[in-house]
Image (cartoon, rainbow, N blue to C red; front, side, top):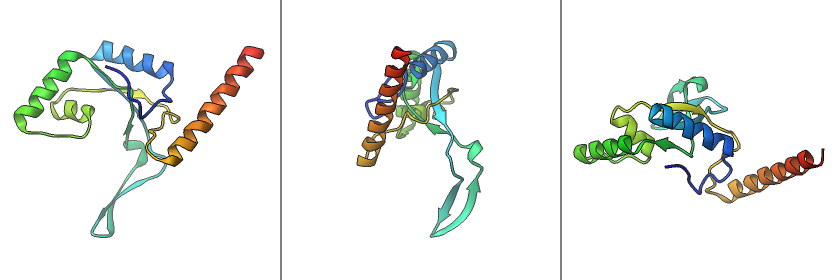
Length: 135
């Protein structure tokens, strides 16, 4: 129900928030907002820019009731729909998803730069834990 190895920096607070929201609402996904405006390009030209406050970037962990997952996968199979993420399958099936505030440090690790950033985040967290245990 929860978890993905590609985002190992999610805190226990985020996991609990997603769990609680999914339990209450049926489906919950953490989202953050982009730091920059996002433009759409067509044939090498931008033709539309979105207000960054209107856009959401999904994260994991995500939480779903089993019945809703089965409903979404059944609808996708019946309609011949293939989408890259579970939350998009639920959206396509018309299932509402509760937005949970995500965490900026909950990065997806897919590149060497991501690993470098993750090591720095882990280092900062360790120093904070040591400081909190000493004080």
